[in-house]
Structures are given as structure tokens and as C-alpha cells.
Amino acid sequence: MPSDPPLSPDETRRYARHLVLKGFGGAAQQKLKAASALVVGAGGLGCPVVAYLAAAGIGRLGIIDPDTVSLSNLQRQILHTTAGVGTGKANNAKTFAEALNPHVTIEALATSITEANAAQTLASYDLVLDGTDNLFTRRLVARTAAAQQKPLVSGAVSMFSGQVTVFAPHLGGPGHEALFADEADDTTLPSCELNGILGPVTGVIGTLMAMEAIKLVTGTGTPLIGRVLVYDARDAQFSELAY
View 1 (cartoon, rainbow, N blue to C red):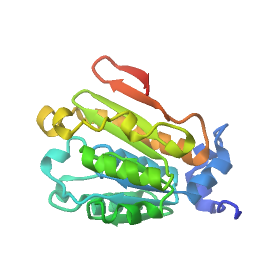
View 2: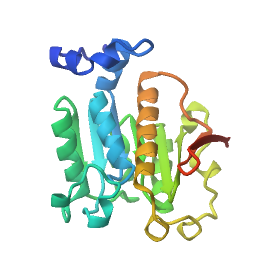
View 3: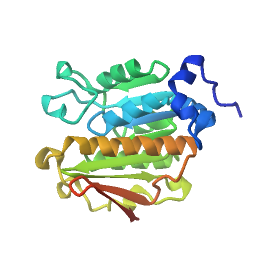
View 4: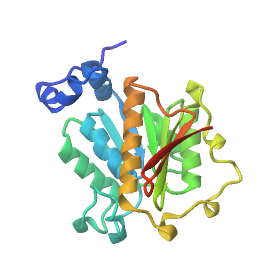
């Protein structure tokens, strides 16, 4: 097998704090550079995911989102700006990530994931991160990732809380249906639009999602496979549930 790509002098300086980190170092950084990830949704969760994966030096990052920026997004979707209201979220996120780290290849897709394009959209990426807000899309992404034997990092938020987990049936973990039963639908789940969301909660969960992706790519630590990490902002507490 070919070795992971070497780091350039500029990358060595850029990732210096990773390179001196015991238990991570140059080998893990090279694995990041060789890896690719698809971020589904450039909203409250997708924004910190894109920011931290680009900053960390993942080699290729796809961003898919059909929506445009609205003023009500700006309280939590930190890659978008007031000047960007009305423009596409995927391309806005691409512009941000390219300015942050020119060593990362960014691919923006201003479209929805559908039954017709899901397999092709996911095919060229090593792992997927889903921060969408409806079960139809979540189930479609989960089915496609499982069929292609790719890890799926999944995050969700509502009001003052959020959760993150990793679905990886090909690694022996439970599938999406183990956490979200077939009878569950969007009418039974809390809506961000109706119930609200405290902005920093999306930052907490989104950065945790980025951390899980980095762990999966580099083999660092133990990923949240078969476990849900739940964050309660009001009580400043984390709890863990097995499923």
C-alpha cells in the first residue's frame, strides 16, 4: 500500500501543535492529510465541523447543503456572515475553509442528498458527518454509509442540549435504526425552528463531531460506536448512554 503523503514545510509549521502531541504526532497528521470526509449540512453543526476539520488538515472535505443563509441562522451558524445572507451555505462554507487552510481541497455541493444521488455523493469519501435536521435525510445518509461500509458521525441539537454518536455497523456497532426506531418521524422530534436552540450548543456538539472524525481517521482513542454522548448546557453536564 502507498504511504501517507508527506507534509510540506508550511504544513509542518501549521500543524506544529499536533506534531508534538504525544499519542498523535506526524503519523496521525499524515493520515489526516490522506483522508476525506463529507459534511452533510452547513448549518449549526456543519459549521464547526467544517472549521475544525479544515483547520486540522484533513486532505479533502466535501460540503453538501441546498439552502441559502438567512438572518436567523447567524446566531449559531458561525461560518456565515451578515453580508452572506441570501447566498448558498455550501459555497460560503467552502470560501471560509479555503481561507483558513489552503492545503485542504474543498468541494461544495449546493444540492440535497436524495435517493437518486446518495450513493454517488458518498462514494468518494472515507467517512461522513451528518448534522441535518430531519429523519428522512438522516436515514438515507445512514443507509448509504452503512451500505458503503463508511463510518457516520451523527449529531443533533435542540433547545439547551445536544448529542453525538458514531454509526459503524461494518465495525461491529449498531445501526441507525437501533437509536431511531422505524416508527419515529419528524413530528415526534423537537424542532429547532419551533423550540429554539441556544447558539453555543451547536458549537459544542459540532466540535465533538469533528473530534470523532479525527479519531476515526487516525485511530486515536475510542470512538463513540454504540454510545451516545449527551450534553446538557443548563446543568453543564455530560452523560453517556449505550444502545
